[in-house]
Length: 155
Image (cartoon, rainbow, N blue to C red; front, side, top):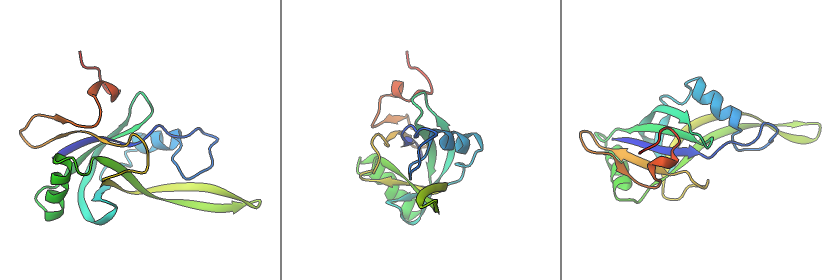
């Protein structure tokens, strides 16, 4: 099963010093192909249920990912059911942030993406699965209308 969804809203400005991703960090991850093969999990726990196969930044600046769920495993089959039944349609990034103390001020350093999770309720607004497709079946649209993705326009 393939999933398409918003994994992170548009990033923060270049001067931002915090735990969220900045826009240039999101763009660097996509341009460098660093999202490919990142594990997909369920609720940030257990073994992986799939992997990221592609990513792009849409015209709103949001991070979009295409993920493949391995429905031949028990965990992947359960995740597939959660998506198809509308139980877990949000996405959440799991990442670490190096925080340093510089001049008596905390400074957010490098962020390292660990996994993307299918979750019931995500922490960030607008991070949803937009569509999924089972092998040989038509695309099923979920949380967002296709014309909001920014990767193409439907006419």
